[in-house]
Each structure stands twice: as C-alpha cells, then as structure tokens.
Image (cartoon, rainbow, N blue to C red):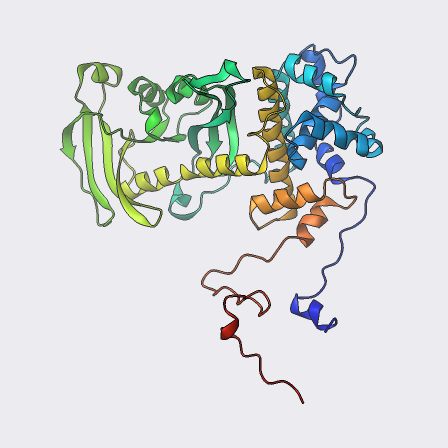
Length: 430
C-alpha cells in the first residue's frame, strides 16, 4: 500500500534546493541594496536608534506572516533573531521604537520605495510590468487600457478619528489606476475617505497619454473631468448614471450583435452640463452578463469609430481592477493595522502593496499558474524555510485546476461521507 501512494499522487516531487537564505530574505533581496538607505536620507528620517532597513523588513514580515499586532512582529523577531539580523543587518524591533517609527517617519518614503522597486523589477525582467497584448476581443486594440477606481479600507473609529467616513465609521481610501494588460498599478493615492472618488480623478489620470483608453465606473461621470480627457486625446468608456439627462442627436446602426440594444449620439440636456462638456457623446446600450444573468447597461464614450461590442468589452475589462482589490485585501494585511495615526496607516498600506508586487514578480518568475491566494499561502507557510523560493513555487501547491470541460474528480471513499452508498466496496476476501 505504501508503494502505491506515490503512484496515486502522480509521483513524489523533488524537494526544492537548499539555500542559506530564508524565504523572507530572498524576497528582501529583490530590493536593490542601498535603495532603502538612500530614500531614508533623502526624506531625512530619524534612524539613529533603528535603521530604515529594519523598519521595512519588520513591516514586510508583518504582511507576509499575517501579524495583526506589533507584539506579533516583535516576538517573531526575537524568536528568529539570528536569521533576522542576517537580512541586511536588520535589527529586531522593540515595541515602542517600532510604534514611534510608524507614527513619525514620513510615509512618502514607502510610496517612493514601491515605485522604485517596481521600475527595478520591470528592468530586471522585461516581461514583467511591460506592455502586454490584450486577450480576447480586445487583442486588436494596440493601445494602453487603464481602469481607475478606489477601494475603501475600513478602520476603527474609536481609535482612528482622523479618518471619519460616516457618523459611526472610519475609513481610508486607496485610489488606483491599473494597467489592464499587466494587472499592475500605474498610479496610486492613499488618504482618508472623506471625499468622493471623482475628487482625485484628475490626479489619478494625469499620466495618461493621447491614444490611451480610460475605463471607469459611474462614480467618475463628471463632465469637467471627461472633457479634460477628451482635450488630451484620451479615450474614455464610463457607465452612465441613472439621473443623467441627455438629448438624442442621431441614431447609429447597432450592427448584428444581439447583445447591443442601441447606439446613438447624444449631448447633455442641462445647460450647466453642456457648458462643461460642449461636444456630442456616444451612448451605447448593451446587455452584459453579470453573475450569470444578462443586465442592460448604458455606456458613454468619446470614440465614434469602435463597434458597439468593443465599447461593451472595454467596460468589461474594468473588472480587472475589482479583482486586484480583492486579491490585495485577501492576501495582504490592510484590514488590521499596527498603528492608529494616518502616517502609520499609509506605511502599512504601501508596504502591503510592495509585498504584493514582490509576490506577483515571484509568480511571474516561477510560472505559477494557480490562484494568487494559494501562492501567498505557500509563502506565508515558508517564511523561515531555507529553500529556493522559485523552486518551492514550482514544486508545491495543492491539486491543479481542472481542465476546461473536465468533470471534477470523485472523492475517495473515506472522504465521501455522504456518498458512501455510491461506492462498490466489493466482497470480503475469504
């Protein structure tokens, strides 16, 4: 029976190569040597008692291990003190020193660290973070497609009063511009959630070039913002709000696509709205599948050459930013905070984004084909393991995804408690 088990499991996979570096150290090594210290000097951080490298390593460990308190990080550093000091000479944190660093050190350094590491990884591996041809129906669009949106991060009002969001709630907000091709951020802002999403729309889209496509939800249907995109030569596809009033100018042929309900040229009906956007818009009404059901949605765009289906498919591509927020919140520690003031929250969110970036890079290098949450789970379990991380990701992981059209495998008899009657156990041997 023992000889049959490896055969049933498809053979025993080889163990990853041993190394002198822990998985945590291997991830930190992707940050160029001297970068953290240089940024600390440029931002004039007070690092006399505790180095900036030690600060970043401590926050990264908290993200990777899922520590929801300062004590959890401090205790882990003491237990693994020898390995901790081997990570570029990082000093194990003391609770008060760690708390003061989160509160007083400028979090703009964490933001700059993220973008500089992003540029370094994109340069080290050109296939990571660069332009990728879009999949499916949008493959013929040889232009950058960017989705913009924001995600609210819930906080505790009784100890974080600076981020009051509602009468009894507190929250921070992450504004993001996502490259749909690579599914990686192109711009981000972290601040309190006291204002509407459209307030930061111009800042989030400032880096878009002529010919790029901006895809957004109904929160960004501000005529002044849309006119600014049009003037710069940026195409946009946004969803129409229900209370917006338009006057139909001309009906366009909708083609043979059954999902397209109507295609027409419209202009704002209200005088104030027409003053903000004094040009015609294209309005496409289409049936889009949401949660397995067809829903009728109305889209606005400034491009008059695309087919109606292209407009609907572009808006469908906006879902990638929702998946990014879900991926980030499920795998990184941005729901339990180890500091209460705004600076500490920004440190933790930007470090979470940094860890997410490094994990996405390892996913690219190792060719990981399973879900990102499973990759994060493997790394979390192997933080202090001295094995090659890329080899770990190539070797371990649970059962692979079933192939398209393939029926799921039947559970073995001992696990199928409710289906025991379905299995033929045979007769007992004499």
